[in-house]
Amino acid sequence: MAEEDNNPAHSCDAISRLPDELLHTILDKLPLNDAVSTGFLSHRWRHLWKYVSTADFGPSWVQLTGKEIVSSLNQFICLHKGLKIQSFSVRFTYQPEMSKAVDSWVLFAINKHVENLDLDFDEDDANIAKNTAVDPCYKLHTCVFNSKSLTMLLLCFCDLELPVSFQLQALKVLHLHRIELHHDIIQKVTSNAPVLQQLFLSDCNRTTDLHVHVAPNQHVCNLVIIENFFPVDHSTTMFIKAPTALNVGFMGSMPRSNYRIDEVSEYTEVYFSLHGMFDACGKHGINILFNDSNVQKYENILQELLASFQKADTINLCDWCIQLLSLRELRNLKRLRFNCTTLEISSSFWKWELPGIIYMLKACHQVEELTLVLAPRNEEIKIPEDYLFQHDFQERRFLHTQDLRLELENLSTVRFKVTHGDYQTWKDEYFDLNKFFNGAILAIEFMQLLRGHAVNLGSLIFSTNKQEIEILFKEEEVEEEEKDAAAPPPPPTTTTRKPPIQIHLD
Image (cartoon, rainbow, N blue to C red; front, top):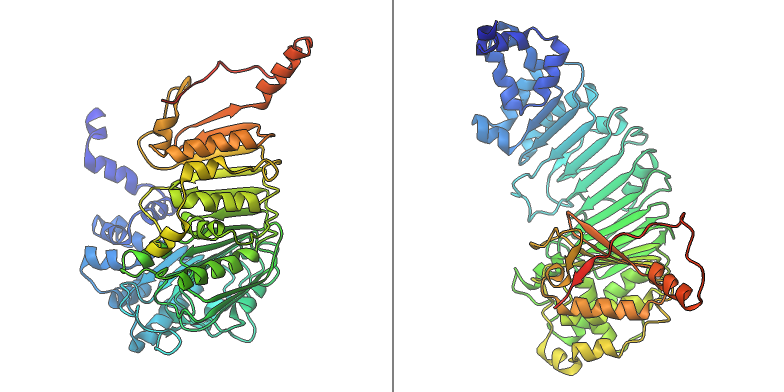
C-alpha cells in the first residue's frame, strides 16, 4: 500500500477519478495554456479543459505558446463546451479588419453569461498617440449593454455607441480607459446600471472636454478619475456631477485648465494623488512652474478644484498639492474653508511643504482626525530660483510663530503613518522616534507643535505596515487633576493602564 501511495501514476489516477465538476474547478485555477496542456495527459483528460470558465488571451499567451491571439481565440471558441464563462480577457492591438472576429468573441462571452469582461484593444500602446475621437477603433457590440450576468466591465481603446434601450442590471464595476465619451454617456450608463458601485475613468477625452455626470444611485460609492499630463489638451475642461458618490478620487495629474464640480455629497471622501505632476517636471525635463505666472496658474486650478469640495467630510491630499499650497500660504493669500472632520496629508516634511500643511490645518477648522503619511523624499516641485529668493523662510522659526489653538480645538486624534523604510517593527516596550521618522527632524518638531496646540488631543498614533503604537494623553491629564483635587482613586471598573512605553529620542 505504501508503494502505491508513493507512485506518481497512482496519484494521477486518483485525481482522474475525481468528478468532472471538481476537475473543472481545478483547471480554472491554472493558466489557460496549462489547462489546455492537460488534454494530452490521457483520454480521461482529453476534453476536460474545454469546460474551463476562465479565458485570458494576452501577451502571456503569445509568449508561452508562440501562437497569435486571433487564431487561438477563434479555435478556443469553436472547441469550448462549457455553459458558462466566468472571466473573459482579451488584450492585444486591434486592427479595423478584425472587427467581425472581435464581435464573435464578445458574443461568445455574453452568450456564455460572462461576469468579468476585460477588453484591451491597445495592449502594447501601439496607438497611444492616436486620438480615439478620430482614429478608428473597435466599436463595441451592443449585446454587452444588455447583459444580465456582467458584474465587471473593463474597456480600453474602443468606441461606445449606446443602444436606445439597455440595462446592465448586474454591473458593479466599470473601468473605461482611453475612450471618447460623449457628454451624456456616463449619465446614461449610470442611469441604467442600478447596482453600479465603482466607476473608473482613465485618460478619456484627451482632446475634448470630459463630462462626468453620474446619475443618482444609492450604490455608486466610488468615482476615480485618472489622467496623465501630456496626452491631454490643457485647454479643456472637466465637468463632474456625482450627487451620491461617497468617494471621489483624482489620480495621475491635473492637466486641464478648468474643473467644474457642480454637485457632490457632503458625505464625500475626496482624495488627490497627483504624482504625475512631479513626472511632468522630472522625467520629461519640463518645469511646469517655470515662472511666477505658471505658479499662480496651477495654484488657481488646484484652488478651484478644492473649492468644490469644501463641504466634503474627508479630504486626502498628496505631497504635490501640499507643496503647491505652500506657495500660496507664503504669499498670505486668502485660504479656503473646509468642513471636513477627517484630514489626511502625505508629506516628506520637506521645508517647502510645511506652509502647505499649516494652510490645511488653518483651513479645516472642524478637523477631528488628522493623519500624516510620511512620503519618500524623492519628489519635489521645481520652484523657480527667483520665487525661492522672494519667499524663502527659516523653517523652525516658521513653525514656532504658528498659533493653531483655535483651529485645532476639535482635534482629538493624530496619526503618523510610515509605509516605507526599515523601521517597521519594534519591541512593545520600546519605540524610537528618530528611526520611525527616518531622520525627518521637522516631522518631530511638527508633532510637538500639534501636541502643544491641540488642547483636546486624546491620542497620538504611530503606525507602519506591520505595527502600531498609540499614546493616550487624556487619561494622564485626568489623573493629574484628580491628584491635585485630592479626589479618591477611581473604582476598579475603570480601564486598566498598560505598562509604560519607553519612547526614545536623542
